[in-house]
Image (cartoon, rainbow, N blue to C red):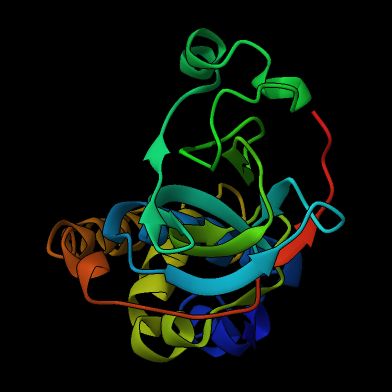
Length: 208
């Protein structure tokens, strides 16, 4: 991971004097939009889960789950379901009391940044997720800062230069950077199918 201030030289080249918090916010928002549009931050991992460890699996620190690309339990693919759909299929799944299934069949989200296998069982879970930076992220994945630094800077400058009544305010240039950023994103809609990043999963008990 690379700290946000690694992108400050790209920002201050066109917005000298911009305060660090303002620059960090703009960089973070540009990175979030970049990941949402390009689906570039792919996360994959395989790990064991146990009753004492976790019934809910949390995304890595400073990240948010954008989409579940796939989940497998002991090699068997799980079917994604919404909590409302599970209420009809397994009425007592929330308490963990439903014994009608002998092994996990579904994957769901009861909170924004968690995933849960239903019915829960100890075993080996493999995940393929698309992530984006969290709103409190102070770091970005290496590949964003290394491979897409200029594009992220364009998105940030598209916000910063439009801030009124500042020494660096430049609406015309801000609009130009914003347009360059959007055009770049328009050409990256399938990039997420080839990008991949790996990181340890955090697990924590969540008895629902």
